[in-house]
Image 1: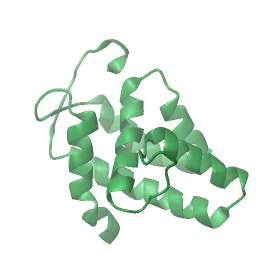
Image 2: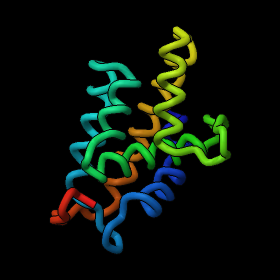
Image 3: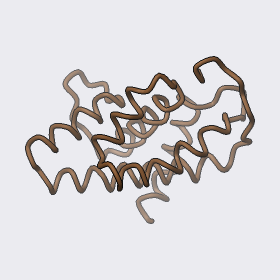
Image 4: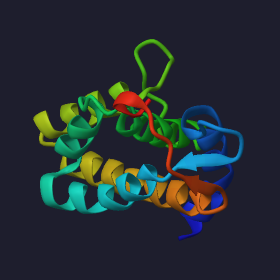
Length: 139
């Protein structure tokens, strides 16, 4: 929990950059997406959960993963990136590489970091007002 608490300011920055659609307001759909991510990771594995959310046509799911990648990058947990720009796609690629290489230790650490980042995101989102925002394709 100590790690989660130290990531709250980065989670707030991620919300400001990736999630807020109206000043001080967050689409209420994010509550469900962030809440279900942990269960999705536990049931399907990290790579599958990230792929489902990144490859979805729903732009809100993409933004959620981008926010998690932002938190990890800003917190200094993840430094790898071929072009210096760490995105949700980079996070997915790193997870798939660890899966492919059967690097259990790296995959476990990455999974725990993603879950902690999602928890920080969820906690920080509670400080904003949730509203129903009707957008085509959610974004």
